[in-house]
Image 1 (cartoon, rainbow, N blue to C red):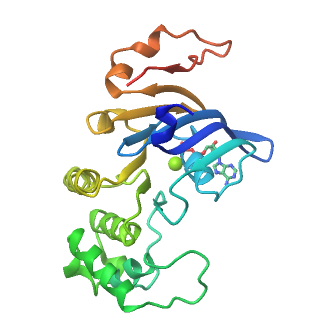
Image 2: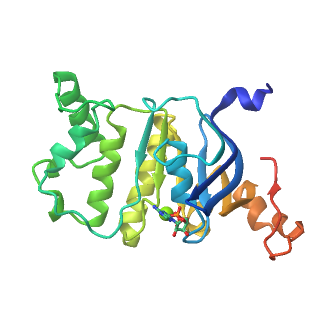
Image 3: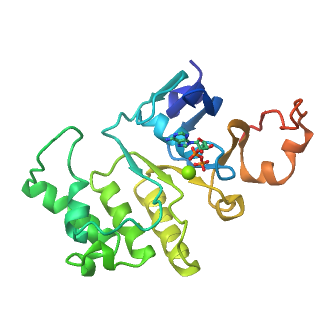
Length: 247
Ligand code: ADP
Ligand code: MG
């Protein structure tokens, strides 16, 4: 094993995922190293969410292998929010507190330490004043901070975010990225973020993986923007061949 592999928190090797006979992710391989801010970008329907769920074991792989060295305990996940399904009558405090629970616990039971962790997360993500509010009454930006606080209650080493800024206005986006940057810098959280907007992530990501069912490119945003990928050959369907540009 070389040095790069030693530092990898997450490795994917020839991962394919299909829904029945319909392929969604085809032969994807890459590694994410500790401390990275790694972005998976691609158009809608390119398999990004499927891949993230595959990494977490929520969707079975058809082929290949995922090595998640942080384990599920050391990993947090903020799923893509579909529409506005927020009628659930829970408060911000209740939602954040559920983030302290280990998987597989059927009946929530919160210790004093759990409550302290949830309180700390409320304050870190600047939503302490919203603790008693029903989640249905929050703005998109506030809800996204609640989901982040919930995910970060146990201070995982690896945070997976699926399109966290979709539906947020410009100001909320900026505020959200400030929080993410702080997590990345101060807590040294490794971040894997899905986005359909390369321009938005380019200035923040250490590397990007560009997907179109297959992986088209892995490397720095500069290399992608610099057109390194354009040198690649195209297959019979006009899809560019995969290019890897070292960081
Ligand atoms: P992205 O997140 O990049 O928009 P998805 O991973 O959500 O892409 O979807 C990839 C492809 O898989 C799409 O064609 C989508 O319609 C299909 N797909 C996603 N989820 C399911 C599912 N549960 N059952 C069947 N097909 C699905
Ligand atoms: Mg998606």
